[in-house]
Length: 401
Image (cartoon, rainbow, N blue to C red; front, top):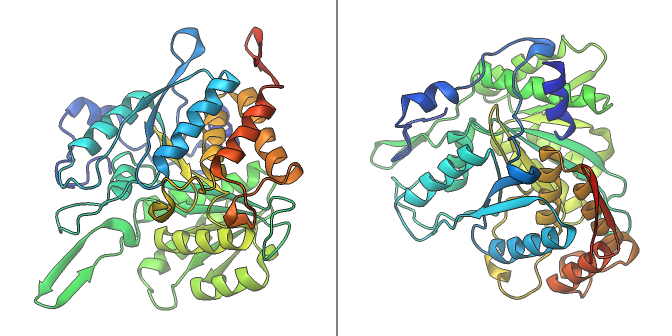
């Protein structure tokens, strides 16, 4: 168990009654149910690494999404081809203009088959009550209970603060994003915020295990328990309870509005941050804004059985789609996270090094970072660097031509 936990930390409701998304096969209900809640080192939230197919290759579901997603995914395929990455993509397009969920159901089936996906932000254009958010549904249906963001500054990138290194551990399937709303009487809408002891503990324990494994010193639980005394009160209470199992780590808590102010004024006081869904969205965007914007950081979504990798701020970028000005770094970093998760660490390293050299040494920056480079300028430079690197892969060395 310790080995399984170590693997996740290093690289890091099934069907909930959504329209057309109820699990139809009892076999899947048994095979993919949540792991039982356990304590301390035996806590079972491991995402199993899918077994590689013939030749050591992995199949990965690719969901381009909307806006700049498709063009960024093309860049990923170019980079993987140049670096000789042993990945085969199963590309699935989800049409944002449709009101049915057939595309989404097929995407979920593909991820269950492959175990891993990389995605852009999937638009849900319809405002009909019975049309669900595809992004939220994916995370809920696959029980991807935690989202992890490593918010680390790049040297030389224009930013409000330097040398930031914060890890955000965000609850991914409950909170305000439970998508349980109803109109009790005309003109009165109620939206339910869901917090359960079980899922609050899963996320809190992930945060503390992450901190312990990665040499962090402190975990901060972000909440609004002064107002939402039952829901956020439970989340905070569970975090305090879990903290007792980690006496070597400091644990404090902070109200969400004060957290945002403290992030802007003194972000270096934070180390690992543990929070619910909506607060995670807010804090993630604040930190990304502090260290260079939405185009740099990637996010990892983990569950007991599946993992999805994506840009950290989950922005669609529709306004800049097709203009060759989007910053591709966040999506490339998501692909690096995916490779580390799958065990292709050598390929991940050479791509990550090429990104670092492009940004910090060659200083090729897109407009969002204060530069004048295009998307393809970034990619061309990364490909040029990769063409000179050797990738060590089991039993042989790949020399990029």
